[in-house]
Length: 400
Image (cartoon, one colour):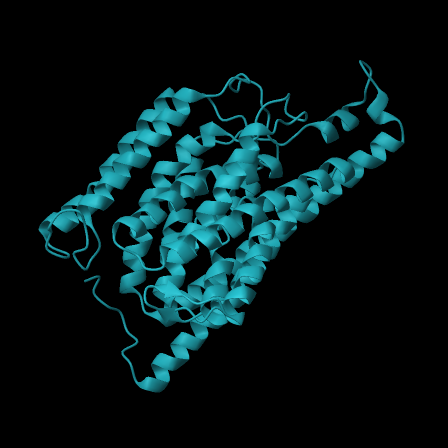
């Protein structure tokens, strides 16, 4: 993929990168994760793009996939959860402010920490997350197998006199009782959009550390850091207000104990921070955490894709307003991921309905995380080796 007069030529590498991106997006969509951990290595290694351009392309590609996910999940209703949408707006409201704050903190840490340390941390965290996700997937698979076995033995046909064991197998890990009615939750969506615009305005005014923004600010000056730090009280205020207004979260951990509301913003803060540090979307990181506290796979995938939509669109708009190159090509890749995500969602949802295996979602997340761990760690290791061979400085750096 060669640069020429502001456009990118169609070549074998660009076609191969597009095909691989299509496959990566279709797999990622099933788990509700963005897929940035796959897109960036594909674009840099196969597509021969520099890391900066690949990162901007990845933001558009994740946005395209998340739009498909949100559209599908807004239309689709789940009979398992009483005909309601699978998106848990309560979890999204509690998590999104801290996730965006965590991304900002993670980006600063990415500038300060040496590349070799980031690569090691990334490998350790993804290996741990992949193992936990696969363990959750195996547990869900066993529960589904027991449920199918009980149904074949006649337990599923019991009405008022069904046994407690059969009933426990049928209960989802997330109870939708007390949730919103089938009507669209406009108020919650408006709150999310308000918060999105609040952070977006801060990013526009502040610009980046090179002074690129809508107003003239000294890069990394007092005003720059004042606007950056303002994100902390803003996120805390939004989260505190939502915690006071929000209903109880009905999900349960695997031991059938209620989950406290505060755990969701804390998980989102950690996922966002790690996502900003490693340069990938927070959806891949918060998905295993939600599964760990007992959120059902279908709800986890739909809710994560909904949250990724807000974070990815913010990144894409920032790249647009700061004058990114090759916008038309980025849009083409975005459309590819949009189509691939729809196809992946349709195929996986049909498989779930046919085989009754929601654990397929968990395994798809595990596959994406395992591939990301291999590709991103290998790519990072090559960068570290190049720095070492070239004698470049490999210690801690200032953020500016």
